[in-house]
Amino acid sequence: MASYDYGNARIAALRSRLLDAAELRGLAEAGSAGGFLARLERADDWRPILRDTAPLVADPQGAAEASIERHRSARLGSLPGLYPMPARGLVEALVLPLDRERIVALVRRRAAGEAAEAIGSTIVGGALLDAAALGELARASTLAGLVRGLAARGLIRPTDTALVGAEPAGVDRRRLEGVLVTALERARLDRARGRGADAGRVRALIAREAADRATVARELAEAGPAAAALLERALTLARLDATAHEARRDPLGIGTVAGYVAAVEAQAIRLRACLARVVAGWGHDLVGSYLGSYPRPGS
Image (cartoon, rainbow, N blue to C red; front, side, top):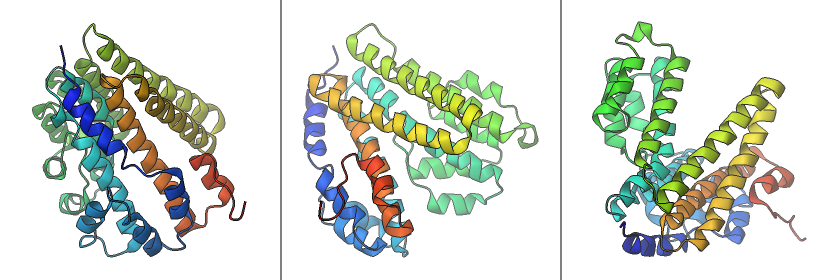
């Protein structure tokens, strides 16, 4: 039987360090990207992230954006090591979407002709693949070689490499993205095999994510990208918030991990909205649609 005791105790401590609603509202009213960083630095969970990011990114807005991504990587990447097998496999299934996001971004940058050195110097780690591993993948001589590198690191099945082909000229970027997303989702389900309630819960979460993606795809086809983006935001935050809330019902199982992963991801989305208010002048109503209850000053 999988043991969640140690890891879940660590997560309880980590979850207490997440930003609360008042802190998010304060960040949204920071006035400048520099002020946003100064407020964020007051939070214990963020101070080390900001300290590590500052020497790498001089521009305050860029530093804020990089810090949000580094926080996701640091917090989600630390989780699998807290658990023994078979629980660790389920935890990997929960955090692997961050690696998928990083890999798809890497493929897009490669396909756009960006130099591997430029990609490697700005890359932020995923959860299972750190920045060094992603940098090695960025330096693969072909996109097909990149896919083989994913298989060698256990991120996808070795048989999935045959779906790509051998030469870059034979790889369509959009097709490759589709192949990779499918392969990575299959890898998540491989990790979530089993008859227990914990495995079933992870499979249910994966299925809900897939259903939301299908709904957004239909909206994109029927109403266009703007409407699809709004729907995606609403569905994603609703799913993440529900998962984070449901974690309280499962303090001794995988639900605690799922809830923390969801809370970290929801926090990142809301932080980007707060930053957009500061640097792009987003209105209260728009930011409020991300934060939930977002009172106007003085109200």
